[in-house]
Length: 323
Image (cartoon, rainbow, N blue to C red; front, side, top):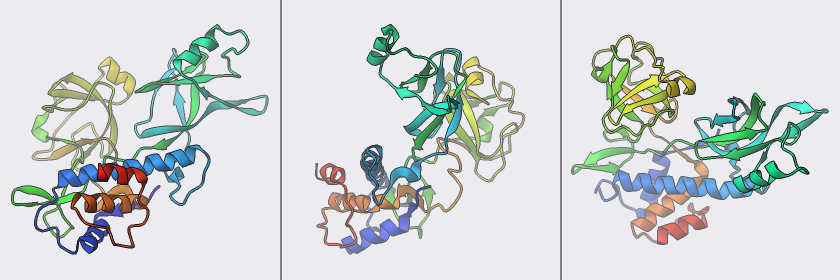
């Protein structure tokens, strides 16, 4: 697992370069989070290009490599990506043919059409293919029950601590009133309807089949749910959802029975597990991208960089910051 940067590390670097404190409130948390996500994405994309071409570099992205997963296919050969999927690394059949591993080759729709019409290159159990779509993939030939799927995981959406200064959310070290931003969609216990097994969630971002992780603020959960449980969303309306235990149940509208609600509790549906656990100062930009982030902030603030610690800055960061 890739190491994470600490907000205080970045705070101190910015403070050192700027030679002034953040207490004036001139860098709001929204701007900070936007630059943080750009820095993270720059590092991941730069590193992936090297990883994909077989190069080994000091910020090796293989830290994001997941243990191969066995993924079941439906009758038409379709399956959904794991919740933290970013890039496919290796796909193969879970059994060997004549003592050899059988890779599953990625193809586009045009190539697939040619293969389906060709007698020289048949799609069979010795030459399977995979077609990637936005929210799912398909493996051919039909009749394969599952595949071994290796991939690089994505990281959670960045969030930083902030404090409130002059009615603004301002990037801050941990000495102030700390709040975690972007940690998930929240709802109160009284938003849970145990009679209909649904939750009122005005303006929610979910669609049916989405994966989310349920957690509560102090481990007092809604009856029928467990802390950090992976659930699937059933979209009832733009302001109401229900929860299912798996994707098939979500599509079929089979709801989890919500049996009780703890009084006065706040609950969260987040994209990643353990979003509320651990040190609240942790940030999900790997350490390798910290310098990119400091560079962006300093350019945003109009500070000329003379700090020798800021050394590993990507070209994407420079181009975006100056643009």
